[in-house]
Length: 321
Length: 296
Image (cartoon, rainbow over all chains, first blue to last red):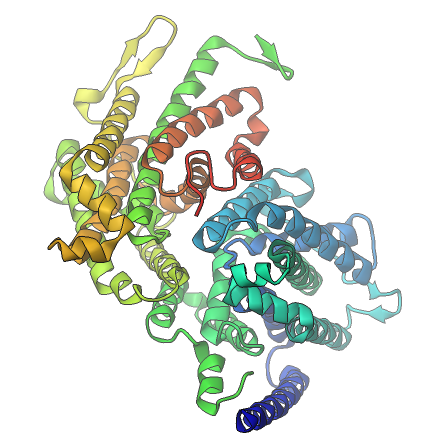
């Protein structure tokens, strides 16, 4: 007993150190990246990485597979773009508005979907995201197939000029790190522990007095809000909002990112997002082959590589990343 | 008649009702296939839309390549695509039997991406024409409207296949084995029935139903790589509304929702794409397990 406790403490200490190193490495890489790679590409990848972190909060720690997460990314992107362009809001308020819209959508759809579990839950999220997709096709403010173009980047809080590429990069990096730490903090909080308890054994958690539905709904809403943060920031970076971000294909891509990187790991979604976004970037010339390759990666991961890259590394090193 | 500010003519109403019934036929066949597969394998087949599309393409190739007409396609295409489904089950899904069903779902999702990507590569996004068989050309005058014979045929054929499937599952010995294996596969195996083979054949059969729907759809909607992806989300909503695992529920809900969608096109066209999802939300509020579903 005592020996086990010592080992457990030791493992916690090892985990803490490993995570501190991993975080420092990630921050260093983000700082160096714009000097090595095309900054716009990195900013885009950071937005998707945040999106994948939001998705991972559900699948990794609550075992809820949402196959409609693009609705949160896309809706926030549209709301933010509209607020910045038509209402002339400065970027931080526009992003906040986008996040609020996604959080609200997450709360409403979550309240309906959360009573179902497993594949049933997944199908309901698909259906809701399709509904949001059709809404975005029809609603006048989204401009249908054209999307919202030429979104002004503006001055964040009226001070920081985001049309300056360096300031924009710093802004996006800050938003990403904020979202990443929010997810990590949530998972490591008492709330996160209860979420994991529900994942492991829901009837037991309920019998201990936890209202599991409320916890799951809170996690779903939070995940929607962070996905919205990613989408809204992306609208400012790319200066547009389009149907791509709300499409079913996008919901599939975020699953792929998380699966490749490692579900239920903090750094997996980030690594996975970087890989998938690079894949799209470098394979863009092959057109539809990208979809085929993504499908093959999907099948290969599910059949032989279920832990993902970071999950596999962490398991080999016996730490939790 | 005037409702919600739209002037509605009778021919328009019946026309949309007919289109609704046709769409309902496809929803019913597809959600039935999903229900059959779910019952036996407890997985959601995300590749269902892709198999539906392959069914339509198989009909096209049989005509162009082998000169085999529509009636041959109606038999051969489900057999071919069903066989491909059975191979997929043996090669991939079987390996995931012991794991969380979410992995099987993700696997079929990946397969759908591969299949759709490949077809889009070779055939682009535009549709290939497939002519209505000459025996089913023309239209009947029903007095209040003209009924194109092919459309009537689609509704009848789909209803017959759905009912036959239901009868086989509910009333025959084979169906009894199937239902028993759903409840307790180990026990059924102990009776000397080859359950793994039954699982493979069930998956193949569900896929064959999707391919059959694809052949029926080919002369109406053109043969397009995206045709499966367009319909699959609605079919999922239909399955959720009907209740997972309920055979008759999925058939009925399919037809009824097709009609509801058609009527919405008449009375409030802006909502016609979303009405099924709105109904799904309402049903989930009142009966989380669906209209015909049992509690999990």
